[in-house]
Image (tube, rainbow, N blue to C red; front, side):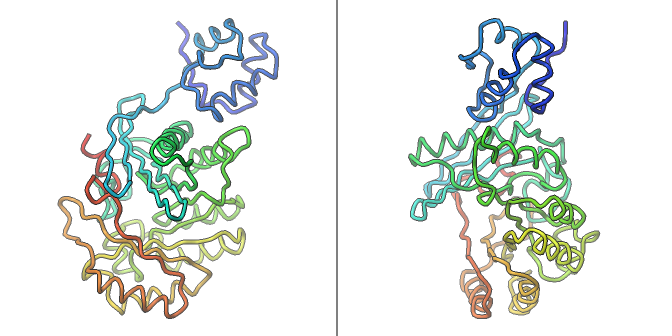
Amino acid sequence: METQRDIRLLNFPELEQQLLEAGEQKFRAKQIWQWIWQKGARSFEEMTNLSVELRQFLSLHFEIKPIKSEKIQLSTDGTIKTRFQLHDGHFIESVLIPVPNDERFTVCVSCQVGCSLTCKFCATGKMKRIRNLDPGEIVDQVVEVNKQCLEHFNHPLTNIVYMGMGEPLLTYQNVMKSIERITSPDGLGMSPKRITVSTAGIAKMIHKLAEDQVKFNLALSLHAANDVKRNEIMPINEQNSLQVLMDSLDAFYQQTGNRITFEYIALNGFNDTMEDAAQLLKLCRRFPVKLNIIEYNPIEGEVFSKSDDPVINRFAAFLAEKGVAVTLRRSRGKDIDAACGQLANKA
């Protein structure tokens, strides 16, 4: 029997070609494409404007491999964390972070099963990288969490952040294709300005983003303002020093003009001193930057704990007084498995 192909791995010209070879008219490809990427169809039976014969042909030769919601955790602060099961049995997670006062509803999506970077403060870093997600599996997270958002808050998603499990720049093509599907008028039609891709810092790939003239925003998971400390918690820094990273981000900003955000988890007694703040200030002056100082979600088996509130407040106030655009991000979902990768790890 012929092996069924995953239809979501075809690009549009390939889909057109398959249909022409089957004796179908060309315009059918656009209808199927929209069912898959705009309407989030999970089966060919849903594609009701196609003939029964065409749907049978598609079911015979192709398959759709959607992700399935396997466990949902609701926090008292409105945060919703979902563990999804993939077609091959692996688990990933996505988080809906609502800020109803600002009408901001953000989904944090995963791009890999596990991660290869072993950052010391991260629950996902304790899992081996098993595989990359394909573009459809990334888009599915947005579609499914958007349904949750409409159900719980009567509001669609407003923002997407690639800050879940995995390193987006180590699965570059899949991430770029997923963003193409999310932003395309034939897809979900979201603005790229509402998408942020977060990286632990791979300079070569940041240069590629600049060359590709991407339209979305970029965030660097910084978490330390000197190489000694950053090497200690993020082994990727040994091949991508802060100087090399800042040069790549400078190139990104010059080429695209897109916003750059520094993510900085405050770790008690490790990176929250006023000396750290002064070093961070120098990095923030290279190009326009937005700084998110993040309250740490402790994970099992790690020595780190979150910085005390007065320490974080003083740290942030120093940078704000020097003109840095600082946001203090308090931990969300404290009463559920809040840390990235924590829920998927339990599976």
